[in-house]
Amino acid sequence: MSVLSVFGPLRRATQWACLLALGVTVSACSSLGSMRDSLPSVSSMVTPYRIDIIQGNFVSREQAAAVSVGMPRAQVREILGTPLLSSAFHANRWDYVFTFRRQGQAPQQRRLTAFFQGDQLERVESDELPSEAEFIASLDPRPRGNQTPVLEASESVLKAFAEQNKPPVAAPQAVPPITNYPPLEAPASATNR
Image (cartoon, rainbow, N blue to C red):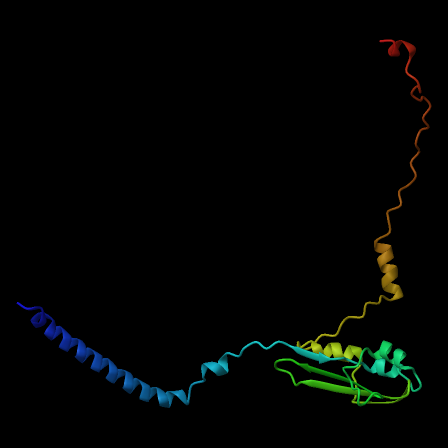
């Protein structure tokens, strides 16, 4: 008996099984096309993590209020920090630009421009700037439902606390005076031993 005669029927069966599997796969793909429109895609369910991007110099409303016309450049730099943009072509202009991008939030962008005449501040132009507290609150993405409690006690609360924590006053007890004291030096016979 030859080897080909044994494997011939097996080869035909394998070919038929492959053709049948190919037919099932093709028919399954065509039926998935109609289901695909009704099901959400994996890419819409899974989103990659994107880091927070902070660029530039944050200038608060308090810092901008501390700057006044006529200040020298060094003093303006101490208050506002080093400008993000200072050009050799525009030596009398400093630009402070701040951008903040966080996933799931609208990007924030603010600009403040300081104009100089020689070494003195001439004027400041800026977008509406937040206070430091407002900016910090905008960084926290969690909703703020609860107010922070006031950490101040009234006079009545302080008096009640003092009464509760007052040390107990014990009645003075009569302590008998000590009349016999131990000797300061050992007896002479005890040292000779």
